[in-house]
Length: 108
Image (cartoon, rainbow, N blue to C red):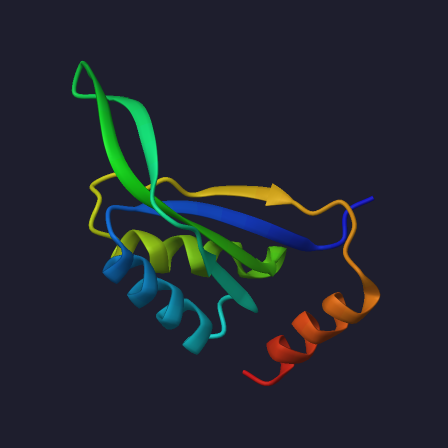
């Protein structure tokens, strides 16, 4: 059973970019909440080599109907050539939290 809520993941290279993108996403009401996690080490394959970099993970909680606009926003405002943008469906969400998210949508 889908709740209509998704959690979108994206990583950025530093705390400054993380906070800037998070604040802009919330200001644009593209998400109800964005959490910025502390630095982590990411290993990935890029330009025929294994890369390892420090990154911050953003957990973006939003309604599924906002995904397309959020994806476009991230692609436009992100410093990476190919930013990670992965959406995970939230199977269950508390009634109060979901009500709060939907109320924010209506305030736009």
